Length: 351
Image 1 (cartoon, rainbow, N blue to C red):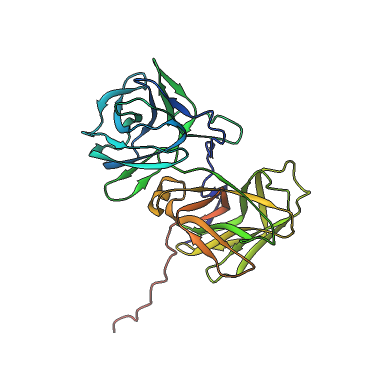
Image 2: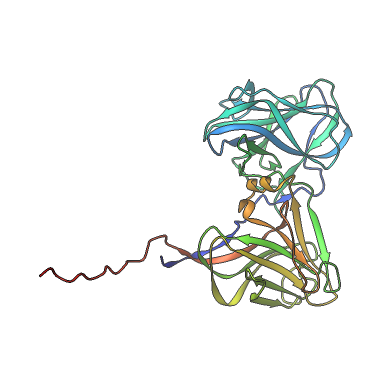
């Protein structure tokens, strides 16, 4: 099999709606009878959906929530008709800034491609709280599908997407165009801190060639000099990019950095891509967490990408429920999947 050149991509992929709303003012408020917060999306695969995931922001008055999947009408708004034979699940005593995974009383028989709505509302007694959402680094992401739908007196669509997700009865989670992460953490750290090196484990699904790395730095992302390092499965540094903090337009945002030479990487191998400050000035990364390791399946790259960190070049510690946001490989060649021709043995002629 041969490597073929492609336009450079990043893996895991980068999406527009990549930041949890930091202020909470963009969340969906439900605080009156009949109000609902919903996300409309396409079913990612045929199967039985048994759990629904969401997160809260501000909770002023906690009351039991009802969570379910519903059909969507011709206008793209949720109906009151249960989807796929679903019966709702409930979440008692919701707290602020918390992820929840609710088990449906009866799973939904889902069909690939169906448009459905996940709806959160109060079960009986009305409370006052916000259902969290995500946006991009510049504000609202311009999403068509999935999208938020918010009912007060009428349904009102928004281009943001919420931190909702679905689990199937086989225990797997699927990407629906958003993901159910918890509260974003902005981590500032320098070369004297513990840990002083943070990043991701990356297990590639294919043989490929990397020509660099992508980093979405946090609020103090370029304030401190740092190295971006790619490690092999034995812990050896395969490539290093040394960055001067004075070279850059702003102190946070996207960084596309090139290795001094491309490197071929193998599938099903644990590589590590890290950011390592080289001075006492802090650099910054952002992290998102989920409730369990399998829930990483809701994110691009799935369970193959998760947090790693260490101190003073010691042993790495991995956290399979957290990911450094976004820290990806740039890839410019992939395996074409075509087996190489084999030379057939020569046979002596019969005499």
